Amino acid sequence: STSMTTSPVPHPSNSQYPAMISLRFRGRLGLLSLAFVAATLAGCQSGPYEAMLLVQGGENLNKTADSKPSSVSIRILQLKKKDDFESATDEELFAKDLKKQPWVVSYKEAKVRVGIERELDVVIQPEVKFLGVVAMFNEVDGQWRSVIDVDTLAANKLVFDEYEFSAEPRK
Image (cartoon, rainbow, N blue to C red; front, top):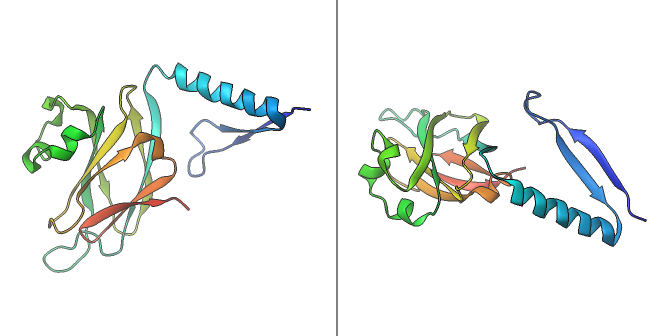
């Protein structure tokens, strides 16, 4: 027999977000139903949707000339494809108005603070497949820009430390 159970699961850090529903299916019919629901939901995505980008600042983040850690400004660019972002010059990525770049659907600026982990709300436009992240470090010494597939946002967090950042699995 096939059974389905639903239970609300509140957002872990903020109760203002709508509850998510966890589904448990048993049997072959349940797996087919789950596949149908997933395909239907994927096909219904016609407008912008909200996603969470988890960022974490390390204890040695973006040291200043006197060796004190400091916050770093980041830009989160919504991209249809990643090629233009990857070949963009520093001047293009640090321009005051990124909206003039034809390959940028939209963008948002945020701060990553020393020793703080937080979620950033990002309203993903329907045509967006990737996020380009640019960190404006005091020194360009390591990884300061990267591309993230929007389908991996829920599984990963961006960890910023010293003068670089990387994607790591959420715990």
